[in-house]
Image (tube, rainbow, N blue to C red; front, side):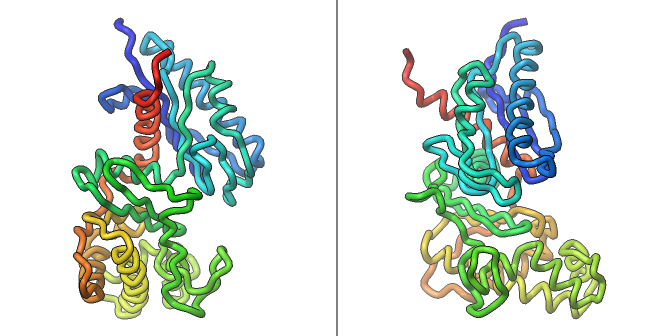
Length: 313
């Protein structure tokens, strides 16, 4: 068999890790998943990431005739991509982990690119997903929290300090619910999947109810659910219009758990945003295309980008 050049792509989440070996044309040669095991503590999680990456290196060598040429890794929290440091992740408990150096050492010295999970997912959506062909886009996943990735001409803008895109912490309801960031009335306290779940559990009287249940109730015509749903969409629209005013994106990509509601979300959201814009140009508002594979696919793109920018010895 002719050896196949490939890279390792690894997306580390709070509960699980998704990985792939990716060829230079984007083909997924091999896919794997593993539990993150955060209950064992941050040091154990870092070791698990290294072990998983090493297994992927061995798999590539055995099945495709050569080891991976590079690796791309997406991690949550605060990330210093330039220096390869996983600075902080509340869900995983780590601080200042030299992830790039640790992985490169474990992988025999191959180059490693480190990225922020949402920005990495946004890179994939922009290049090969819902934002394909858009020179300016904003990717907003609505999950436990709300984050954002700003796409500009094929790359993701991280900002001067790596904090760009934190749309979930735009204050849309001053004096509103307390947020973990220390502010009150942040967008993610009102319009994330977690926020909708809390509001619908309270309104329905069912402590086990979640955002998906609320969406189903809206679709079936439940008035209480509609009230909860539209309150969240109103807050979301306010936050998105602020972002549109600042960034002027051509395409607005909405992903995460709430986007799974389909037109139950997108029809009223498009209307709410359109009602709020004045001089701004309305972007195309579309659902994300890559689902939970975006981070892994984006990690593969980071690895290939890294190889493309390396200066030959």
